[in-house]
Length: 270
Image 1: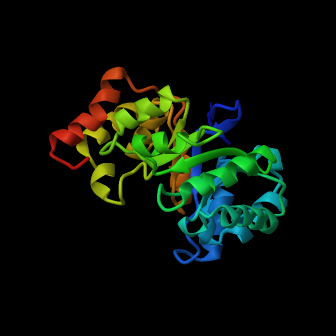
Image 2: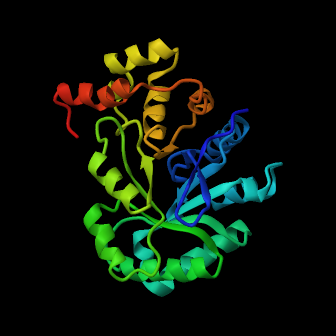
Image 3: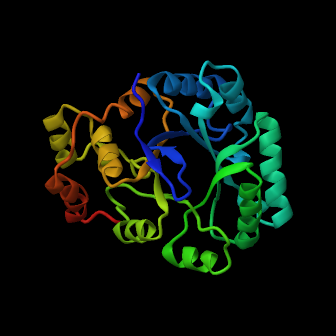
């Protein structure tokens, strides 16, 4: 079993460098999602991410209370859905999540999008953080302008920002800003938007073959070497297990720079 690297956030708490995003309940059978969780646990994953409307609490409750892994060794990350941004609704959503999971705290709770009354939702997360019911608070899909607007009124600066990052969208400028502000970037969609052309890219395959790895492992390594936490979504047990086996090679500076460059050279959109 491999144990994932961890990254430290501004309040001193740690987040696993690799995690699994659970799909909405409509997209797969419960048995398939349960199997994916079991495979991920056995491989060494401890970070599991979902959204409040995706109805994964039944599975996560089993994860918390019916496995040999201790609660303090698991990391649950939730995103607050956009319809729950009023202060009272945000508080209620978090409290109901805690009740359904039968736990005293959520490791991380994020605002999903910078829309509507997201500042009210942030105030609710700040108060729940102060009460110890959330250990890390953050945002998702926030650009620099959104973060600056939020921080005009925030008591607590966001600790993480979950954004789309992959070799075709490297997000260099935003990642640089996040690091300047002490906000940990978390990559969702690290393999692009489901197209096989990224996984089958000949230049990525050449790098992967050099290290006797898969292109997926090279992409994850490219992100983690940039000190970006990674969320993968897969129900393929082999892929889940492979994803953590990336600590036995290091990409060179030239390779790190080349990975997005060769894709851009082919006139692919960022």
